[in-house]
Length: 100
Image (cartoon, rainbow, N blue to C red):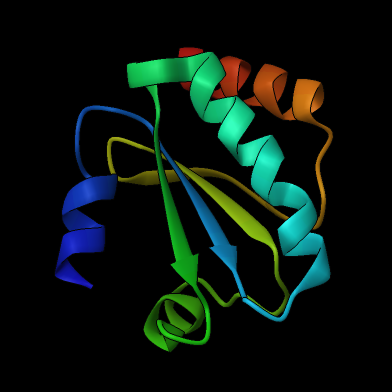
């Protein structure tokens, strides 16, 4: 948990992909998340957290379903949403959120 806290408190925005191995929608999101990483490069850190291996994260952020995306900027949670996202919409949303 301390490594997670260190990452989200850094200067770079962080997108957290909370997933589960058994989750079909999570598998759909995998290539989308990879393309988001390619699009942002070093401007955005992306970390994947398996909800089954990290229940403390699920508890802390009251995550009830996967996939759930959490976007942090300088330690503050600035956006979260569960479900599948379209790649272009997700990229645009992240750009808007991290600008402010």
